[in-house]
Length: 253
Image 1 (cartoon, rainbow, N blue to C red):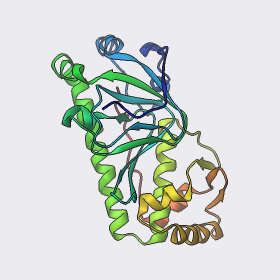
Image 2: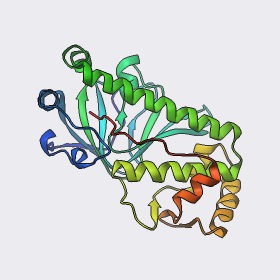
Image 3: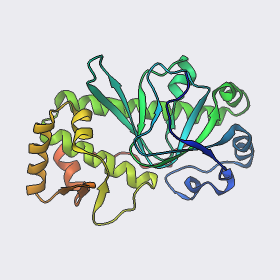
């Protein structure tokens, strides 16, 4: 089964001029690693907002690095109810699960227009053989994803509705700035709907709306047609009892 995108392939940005390499959040490549990545990368894929990049159960010959834009990972029940499990931002891998397990265990949908670097999953073993440092990076990225899922599970299981939403917006805002998706400023705009918030946190849409209004009254954020404008990421993090511990430069492919 092919990925269910409505995207199209484009001419690739060279690895030497990759915009992620200019972001201090990400670690540097040695020349031998950069040379391998030039050959490992197959091209780029442009994806429209709302497009399904990968579908649960799909078998796809490729996996991807997010070069620009962002997406969400989700699972659905037979009756259509959806649980968003995490978000993919610049530098994150998409489709690695399908590369290792043969089929995707979740779906991925674009929250904005995106550009994805395309890699052949059949060459993944070559990466492990020829460049153990890059193989370690893949393992690090997978481990980081596990840590984020742990925090998300804690949020759904133990935080109150107010703490859940405060955590989610602080988490997304902090990650967005670090990845270069958004610029650090007095207000950070997060382009998602209240339904996305509800589907991430296991809340009803009505409960989500009422809780967001409480945060608005505290002057922590404002919600409009374009999404959420956050005025105080630190205040949201403190309300949720969450601390962003990411301090060291992180790897990417």
